[in-house]
Image (cartoon, rainbow, N blue to C red; front, side, top):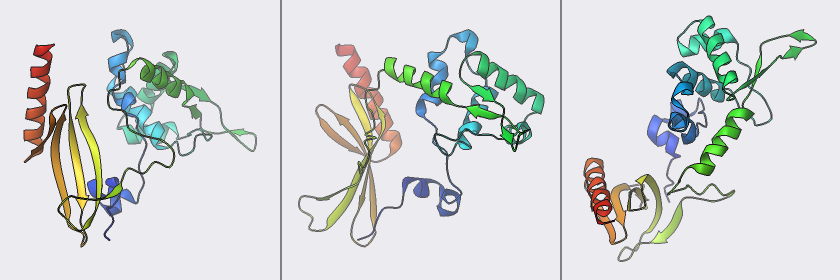
Length: 216
């Protein structure tokens, strides 16, 4: 039976996926929604955090890219990187430590625990209506028999957008032989509506949510 390629391979291609990828929490991308206007992150601040996360491979190992490396990757000057690091430290989203190699001071290490702590505080006050199941050992893909079809099918669903009124579901099915079927579904309390495209699904979702809010 054909197996579905990992999602990152489907999106980016095998050669890109083989270089690796960073785990960027959605709460980080949404962080400015939870910060006061006077301390909201500037584009460089957010990009710097993303670059640091990209070099943070293990929980217990603090990332230690040089300022020069960060400046090149962020497309800015070393002075601007120093300023951004100071900003992140001042608003308690980052900590900095000296790294020593055989007693000699080398590049700084960056402690991500302040950011982790703050994002966990944000998650505690945010209304996450469609949480992903991140249980250890939980497998998203399931095997099932579709009514009226004898072939065994690999099926999994991703929530693309959701609220308490409706959700947009991207459903993947892989039949024997490797043929893949992707369906866009708007799921409501009244049932599922299969749409012909993402645009149709988003339009229907917006209509359902607006209609339900009027009736509240």
